[in-house]
Amino acid sequence: MADGEVRKIDKEQGKVTLKHGPIASLDMPGMTMVFKVVDLKMLDTLKQGDKVKFAADKVDGAFTVTAIEVSK
Ligand SMILES: [Cu+2]
Image (cartoon, helix red, strand yellow):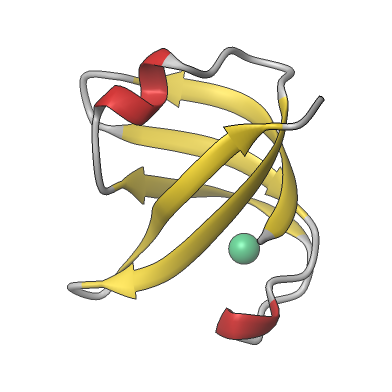
């Protein structure tokens, strides 16, 4: 799981903007970027400013959040 912070949520498009730390599985350094989500219900659990832990993968060519939880 990578660390991130929710910057923006777009329920209509099914996308979330995350400022994230390095993601080893994707060989990606830290940055702020937009992800799709595998399940739109994920977006209901999030709000702007939440610190999160998440997993992401490339699905049909698009970086997609496959799991996400708010850090306590
Ligand atoms: Cu990134």
